[in-house]
Structures are given as C-alpha cells and as structure tokens.
Length: 561
Image 1 (tube, helix red, strand yellow):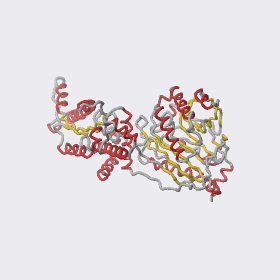
Image 2 (tube, rainbow, N blue to C red):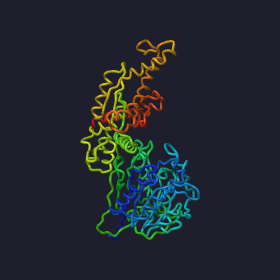
Image 3 (tube, rainbow, N blue to C red):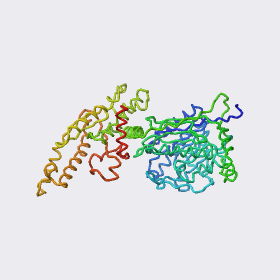
Image 4 (cartoon, rainbow, N blue to C red):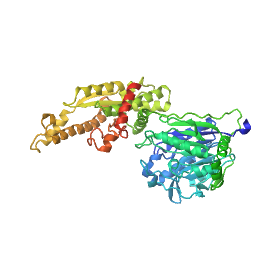
C-alpha cells in the first residue's frame, strides 16, 4: 500500500568530459541535470572531477583550474537547474592551501556541503597524490569559505566541508569517491552502519578487460552487507589521455542492480534513473541481526540538516524492478572500448582520419578491425539521428552541410587510409591479405614499394663499411640480416608519417591523418619488437591487449561482420 512506500526517483549519469574543456563540460553537466529532472529525479549524481575533467594532471597545480571550476559552478547555481533536485557534482577544491578531490552538493541555488576524497588512487595508471591530498579527519566537518564568484551568486559566505552526510527531511545521503569503494576500509561501511541510506559514488574508472565484473562485485557486496541504495557514475570518454573511461553507470539496492547504463557509447550524455522504495532499505537492514548490533555501536557521522524531501507522494508510481547485469564478452570489450576511444581522440584532435600500415599480419588486422567497429558504431548513431555524432562525422569526414555517408565503407574511404608497404622479399600472401582486409573495412588502400628507400640507406653506409651487408637468404650473417630487416621496418615508420601528412593534400583536401600503431602488449613486455618501426605511432589501440586475446578477437570479428 502507499503507507509502506517511500519512493525516490534517483539519477546517475555517464558523461563524455574532457580535461580543461570547462565550457563543454559545463554544457554536458547541465544537460544531464535537465534530463534527470525531466525523468522525475530528485537526486543527480555525476562523475569524479566532472567540472574540470579527470585527466588535467599537472594543470591541477594551477590556481586557474580551480577558479574556472568555481565559475562553472556559479553558472549552474545562477539558473533554475538545481531547483527541486539535489545535485552531487565532482570538482577540485582548494581548502586552507591544500588541494582536495571533492564532491559538491547543490540544491535550490545553494551549496549545501563539500565532501573531500579520503582514499586516493595511486597505483597502476593513477597518481592522484601528486595533485591532491586525502582528507584525514574522520567524522569531522569544518567551515569552507566560498570564493567571491560563489558568494555573489548564492549569498553564502561559508559551507561545511569534511567527512559528513546530508540529513534530509526523509533520509540521510552521503558519498564515497571511486578508489574508496576499492579500498579495504571503505566509507560505505561506517556510513551504512550510521543509518545513511543513499550513497553516491562519482568515479573516473578506466576500461580494463574484465574490470566491470570487479566493480559489480564490490557494489553488490557493499549493499549486501550493510543494505542501502548505491549509485555509481562514471566518465565515458577518452578525456585527452591514453585511457578510456567506460561508463556503465548503475543503481543498486540491497545487493541487487536496478538500473545500468551502457559501457561503450558514442553519446556524450547518458542518464540512468531508478525509482526505489526506502522502506525496502529499512526492512532489509532491520532483518540482519549482526548489522543491528554493530550499528548500535557505530560512530556518529556529522549531519548537515537540509529541509528537502527526496521521496515523493505519487501513489501511481511504482518502484523499479531488479535486473540482470549486462556484461560484454572479452571480444566485445576489445572491439567496442578501443573503438570508442579512437573516435573520441580523433574528433578532438582536429585531424581528418587515420593512417594504418597494413602488413597482412594479425596485429595490423586487429587494429583495422577495431577501426571497422568504430565506423559501424558511428553509422548506427548517424542513422539514429544522433545530432552530436552527425556534426562530428561531417566535420572530420569533410562532408557538406546536408550530406551524410551512405554506409560505413563510404565513411571509411574518407577517414581511414591504409597502405601495404612491401619490399622485394615480401610474400604475395601478405600482400593479398592486406588488400582483402582493406576491402572488408572499406579503407582507401594503396600499395607502396619501399626498396628504393632501403637501398638508398644501404648506399649511404657502403663507403663507411668494408663489406656489403646481405640478407641471410643471400648468405649473410644473423647480424647483417637483423640490421637489414630493421632498416626495412624503420623505413615503414618514416613513410607512414610522410604519407599521413600528404595523402589528403594529394586529394585536394585539407588536413592530415593520425598514424595508428599495431604493437600488442606481449611484444612490449618482452621487448620483442623493432624500435621505431610500425609499433611507433601517434596512438596504438591494441597496446594494452595480449596476443592470445587478439587472436580470439579476430575470430570473433570474422563471424560478426
């Protein structure tokens, strides 16, 4: 019955933020708030450092970065966007001359609370302690004095900052940020024991094969042990660096998932909502005797009182139902993750396509297949009328204002260029495979003979050497053979960059191309590669993938078409 229902419609999102793109980041944040409100949400969670972008690196050491973040926040607060919806926004904060990675809570044109991150990511790809300091004062809240740009908009002089929670009129809500979920002493445990019923986790978590399973396991475990509602937000973009942040924002309650966003997408804004019953949280927690004992002895988290109801009284509304989590296969992850990253990088680079030396081998074929997947994903969005993707495709592909590609192969012929860089010792089989791969992905393909280049280099060193180096097949030693093979490989790298700069010019089109590499992670780890050959490129979409996974991916790609 309605008396046993305390329904709250909650929203989380995946955003395509970009480091230091304050104007673009602001527009995407605003759009996500608008969509959340349109879906009836009273709480909106966004990704980690969404205002500045996560990958600002040493720009976090500059005071301008913090000032521009406050300017974006002032712009949001100086509108009606936060009217009737609690907005949980990620941005850097400078407090007492210390830099913190924070969540900022906004409601009805006011700043309510700032919650700093308490466990920083410092392993693998992350170096957060280079730019930020973790908040060390457990269960302590102090005053933060707002900058002038905020005081002029909100009329506030200070707000609470620290380890606390929002005590709303009908529930308690707080947050933990990304790494805190993965750490042994996660905040969700003490927060859950002290009665906080809704927890938001704004993250910037990069794509790694099979990593989504780990995230899901942690979130299910967190809400199974202490109960409660858990919202997870993530970036879904390249962000200007080598990593791809793979979205998959979700909402869970009491160990079950109720909403899940896409893991790989060409969309810059994706909002996910669920309507959940707070009574279910209370009943679940009350049924676990051991939790009751520990909760009765839990330390009290400081409360910031807020006169706002997150629940609603719509008797016709119904709570969301649990759902099965969608996982991609490893082959699909290899296809879609790098494909999304490639497009994000290309459209932001200002260049006009890719150039790939296509040898006819498995590694360059894998790179070509990933570009093919990217092209098919783009055409799917173009046919669906995605205005953002259409605008980018027209710009990158040099299409007229009212012109669109007919299919992925036509688009490929404009933005994907390949070449077989052959020599007199190259086999007919690899030449034919290269041409067939190019045909299947629709690239603008050429065959280039490199013998003149390698012969010229050999002629340069002839006056220096007492002997003429020969290939092993002509009686040469291992040393001679390796040197001649390496100069072939390095000539291909030089020619690749030369062609990438001139191919569009030769067609009377402005712009140049990004050079794609094809070196897998096994080669890099073992040093089994020629330095400055075709493994040297602007970007290498298979650089983090092993040979076995790539071979399986190629078999998958052959059947998926």
